Image: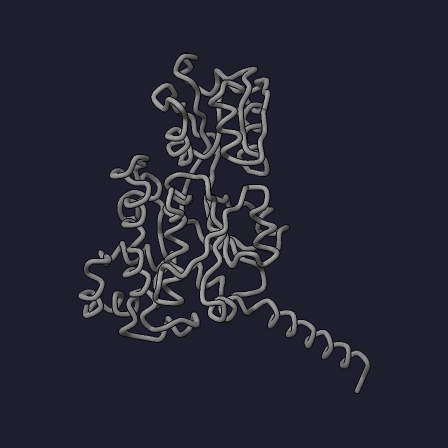
Length: 338
């Protein structure tokens, strides 16, 4: 055999070995009997345990949707609380199977970390909260202000960019965790606190006197939140991505927890494909034919999860806005199952 051909065979074998070593996430989850999901742990409405240790929140429900798809049981999830600083290393090390934790999709995170963003599950943007007593009407009035911010986040970078672009002086005060930075703001170490606008609704509830604080009107960045998985496992990437798409498509077709069984009898070909009565789309993912039924029965469609965790009926009272379906003036749009 020619040396070049032997080398080529060896290279192919090495690639195959590497692929098989990394493309086992679903098998590992099934063997373990539960999903390990990287979550926030400190963010009301999105991801944190209550006094009884039960996790609740928008991101939490997306984790449970994956468990429902794999196990037909949304409770088969172990939540791992991760700070902004350690979230990526935990996923890289295999401590969690997926990161669903208010994490912004950026180019460098897609290319330098050995990770992939799967799909935008929440469109957000960065804002500021200040004390009403300061009588500020705009973030442009924060020149020379001390601003509390969490380390290792796009928030920290955006803060610097915003002040530099507007030729303002900045005194950033950084902390490793959300609770530390929020406590510093609440005790007066900073004039303002900055984070994603969705978080501002939740963190204001954690302040000693929430009514004494106001969110300024400016949104100073684009923060498309996504779930993240490791490079090298296309099957698991597809499962995480399409579980979100399934929830969006279910909402678009009016499929809910309450009516999913009835909808499974529909003659609509798009609904039949989505709910598994036509085609083998679940099997193509390595799941069962009824994978979407499992998700919707387990947690509901995207809109149901949104309203239950952060919507108008909750303490956060977040409007759908950009996170409404494309058919209702929003940006949420899922590719078809076909």
